[in-house]
Image (cartoon, rainbow, N blue to C red):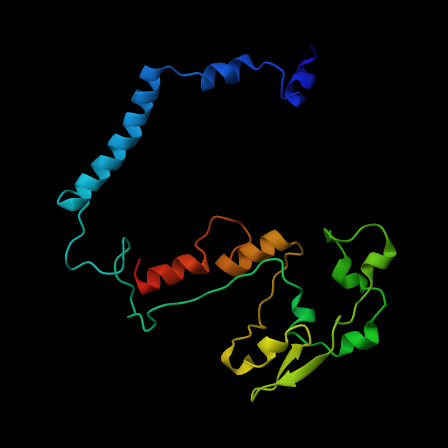
Length: 198
């Protein structure tokens, strides 16, 4: 049987994997005891031992933050996959005039847009899908998509100063949540947890 075909065929024998998965009773208890023992040791050290928290320490493992927390709780919702800001809260009246015209080359030069193909119709300016109207004392523009949200706009915070050079979602999301396009930096959730005391 061809080696490449064996990888694709789930019924083909895989001797190395089968050997790794086949463990006897002694190996099972030996490996399991390691995990249970580690958990038990961490619990014991946390009671009165080396890992026990001191009485005066506040704010989690990093210590207290430099400013006292004013909030007791934070509810932060990040809902990836929603319609664009242009279709919800960021009204751009000029898009009605530009609808159907090509995107200016200065915005496309040297960039690869994941949703755009070689088809020229994929590079046209589009107007908002639903009409916008102003709501609340603040006069916030909200799309017809969000009738219930429009009723509470004065209780919401719209951040419209966000900007990134990232043209794809993943690095832009990472930048929004952590300030860096590269993953692995502390996110807003980690900072809120630290500020309120972890």
